[in-house]
Image 1 (cartoon, rainbow, N blue to C red):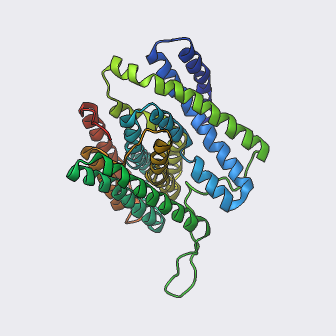
Image 2: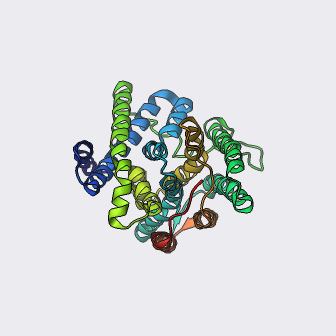
Image 3: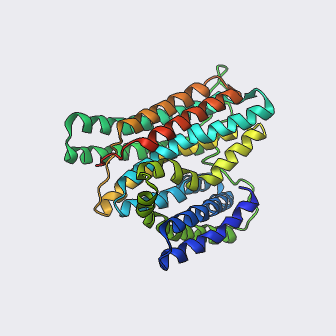
Length: 362
């Protein structure tokens, strides 16, 4: 993330003070959203620095845990207030934001500057499969509820499915960190490409102590500012005529993933498309395979059970995003026009969700 964006940190205390002293909700919301951008960047950078001191195994687990920390904190606070529409929309929005918006901007910028770009399609094939698995994990309970309308049973179905998704993500981490390289036809092991979203920070610039202190402070700051953001969502949506669905789908993912988004676009601009695809795909898979199950289990702990039932339109968009990502990443080549097409689909989705009535959640 560029250094000048850290100037936005000034909005973090302003949001907290405004929230404490009764400032207009729209002012608090705007200040909190701006303040969360550098805080999320600090979490990401500090995590990478600490991971560099811990080695590939522990560092990979740390990066996996804090990869979407800002968005996880926001959704946990929203979950505690019973804002299920906002929570589920944030899950959907984060996936399509990475696979359509961020990847689209990256391919457009990188392709316009570098022409035809190439990448290792083998690196993205596993992430494509994981994304399709994630869509299936959200589609199945939604289909169950549509066919049965049984709110009690769908809660019982969501818990084991969340556990399966979480175990699948754990297996993915184990494969990335410890798994053997693929075997070639000649029987020799080919070097295994680590997912950039999981393993980072090999050469730390900070000391371990500085990294840990920064990570702790940034996480606490994110939690405090996120509380101000979540508390102001309902009055802001009422004042502006927006739905929680639209705010969760568009605003929250951009705020929570701004630092990673910038890194992905910058990598494509420098013609390092493997890194771009690793960042976007890694974040897109972490949300449904890790964040969503954590939210389901947390909802049981706070006595606000959340299911994995999503609206048909959300599921359609998720399926389209997963399929188009798999299609674009299959041939190992990309150009700027593919970026334009991804952006076109994202903005069409944004327009539809702007007018889409807020669904009733379970």
